[in-house]
Length: 122
Image 1 (cartoon, rainbow, N blue to C red):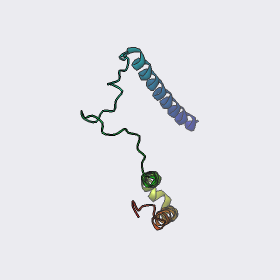
Image 2: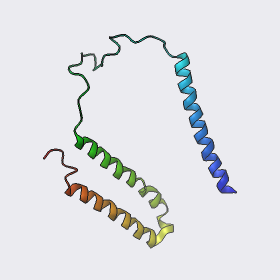
Image 3: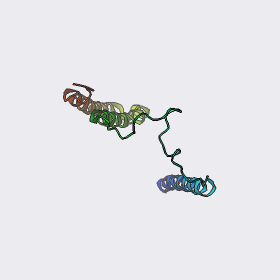
Image 4: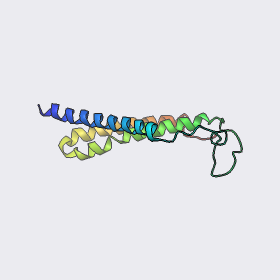
C-alpha cells in the first residue's frame, strides 16, 4: 500500500508539472505580443553587429562524437551518488558490483580513446 502512495505522489508531481507547462504556454500565446515579424527582426542577431555569414555552416562530426561520449559518461556517473549513499548497506558485494561497473566504463573510455574518438584533429 505504501508503494502505491509513493507512485501516486510521483504521478501527481508529473501531472502538476505538465499542467504548469501547459498553462505557461497558453498564457504566452494569449497574453504575449502579437507583432508580425518584419524582415529586420527575422535576421540573425550577433551582439548588435550585422551577421557576416549565414548560420548554415556544418559542424564537424567529431564535435557530435565528443558530445555524445560526454553525455554517455556523464549519465553513467550519476549512478555513483546513490551507490555511495547506501554503500554501507551493500557491503563488499556492492563494492564489487561498482568495481565491475567502473571497469566497463573504463574499458569503453579506453576503446574510444584507442579508436581516436577523443582526437579533435588527426
